[in-house]
Length: 354
Image (cartoon, rainbow, N blue to C red; front, side, top):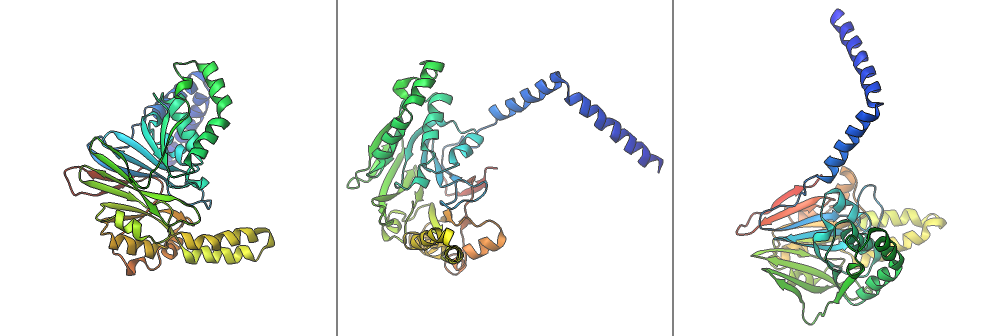
């Protein structure tokens, strides 16, 4: 009993000491310095070895979900870094993971739905001002992409001006602000071929949003294919043939229909119900995506652009309903899902950035 009393007294005294210690400005300054040092010098989680790597910097579709970003995939091929789509919240993920936005070689857009480019402005501004990009951000995308990049440039003209006047040419040079936009010629589908990397764009089915594309990255014998938004697509299967990893979008018809029925019961949300039904015909159910992966002989299937985002065990079971009858192996993607494909190897290493 005496030992317990001593423990309580010592604990109480220690709490009082801590309370008064942290009220000291000197101690506070030390703590904030340590915290900033931890944040700024946090190690980049991307692999340093020669590999083809993909990270989900956003895993949900346009329907909201707490603490989950809209669609975004980072690709690292050797030392080159690319971003495929950048929806809301995705650039915050990249910054939190200490990804140097100034090192992004190019941004690749799959199509002109806003949930795939709403963070493009932050991606290009962050790389320009904060991380000292040396040239305009290169952007590849289908027809219509130029209206997005030119629109951002027009909207941010004053921002460019104020940052340059405040920070100077060394930090915010005006000749580097903005985009270098390249419209994909689908008659010549290889859009990048350099340093052992080949990036191929291909058409997918997302009518009436045309053209919409997917991308395949081939690097030193390893490959990653990204579906973009699409319904079941034979052309996707063709271009994903024998890929190491297929990132395929997925929508649960069961969950979307249930949500639509509830929304339609309320006049205030009936418009949402209409949208939830309309989108069923230009996305892919998880079991269909699994079938596509099988036909493409994809070694690993990762679901992304999840509609709706399945939060919780029961929701995940419903979302994946029927997949186990089609395919034995898959991964339900989440923000931070990372797959590493070392060169000169057949390994597929799956991990998560926390």
